[in-house]
Image 1 (cartoon, rainbow, N blue to C red):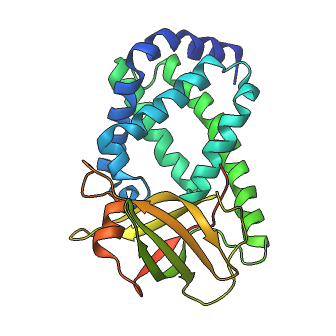
Image 2: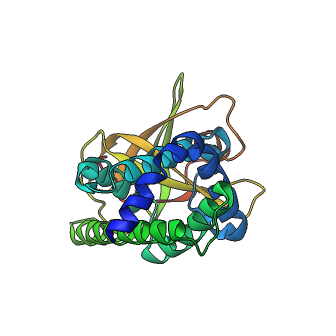
Length: 253
């Protein structure tokens, strides 16, 4: 990034503080309309509650505020890249996100796509995307290299369901009957399920309660006032022992 790029990004901070949530809500709507296949990647229940747009808004604002010294965001980047790995985010998807983010900035803030401001944000986004994609690829390689480890989504089947007052504890085993990655009991595992009556998969993270050489157990609590895309409610209401689902390697965020 050039010094001019940095100054232009910094100059947008006051405007972002006023408009960043509206910007990210617009961005997600635009991107998912243009690329409906990404609905299998992003949690639509979190979209409907505004949780995901607010999280992105905080990240965009923090990056703009610290554009001269992004190293202060190291802990945040570690958390975000781990989340991305749990969702199997790939480098090529950064191009889709970048294109829609730049157009959203242009359309929401009413600036031309060929303006110096958009050029500055393109440089800023490219720098960040390359950094994050590099970190994520290293994480994928590290996960796949470990005993029982894997990168991306892996097939599992439900081995047991223990109902409780809050919902249930699900135990899942790898569909290939091979070993699974050992991890801390309080690690998070991303599970992806089929949404009933939709040609759509949805992911959500759950905290592990127990692990073995071949299985994971995690608690699922019923979600009140959730949308039809709530993975917790789909698991509790539609999934039974023996049913198939997918999971990514558990991670500690």
